[in-house]
Length: 214
Image (cartoon, rainbow, N blue to C red; front, side):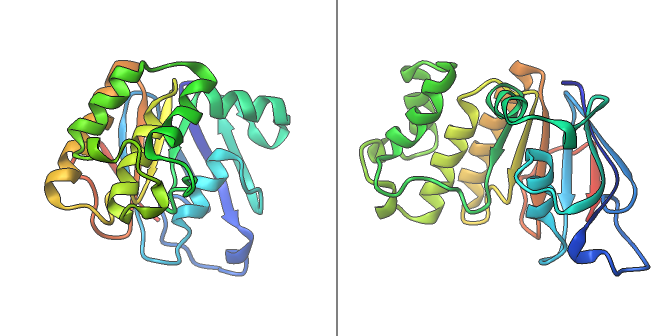
């Protein structure tokens, strides 16, 4: 997949608005593979909704979301499974980890779908992010910042053309934010992927090629 395009997309909850000051809603917005984007928004403007529309988890909108030239509204369940398995990765704002499983088990569940990364690579990432001692710790007993790092590792253990990172460093200090950004960008570069980061304030310090105001 080379492009993600939103054509006149408006969430139903915003349908009564008559004036817009958005680079995403009610306009044409394009994201291209291999490029780096930041989507900035105030709370309540639909940042996570935007991610859900791209991932196909929600369809409560007018307008059209295209992958290349394909209307995603026509996708079958099988097509969505293939897309999320091999073409789009997502770091959820709320993480969606399994609290009863260990940090490593949370990552392995995702990795076993495609066997995309070796266990040694995964453990190297845990080491780089300062959570190697948490490999066998239950996620439910970890801090939110530690969980964010586990969720990022999980997001990287699959092939992807685009990665969406929704508020990826909200609970991280500057050093861990930098390390996580470096790991994500290195992996995205190796895959030739596009990167879309969302933020309502603090965001990864990267050389964004385009900033969208939501």
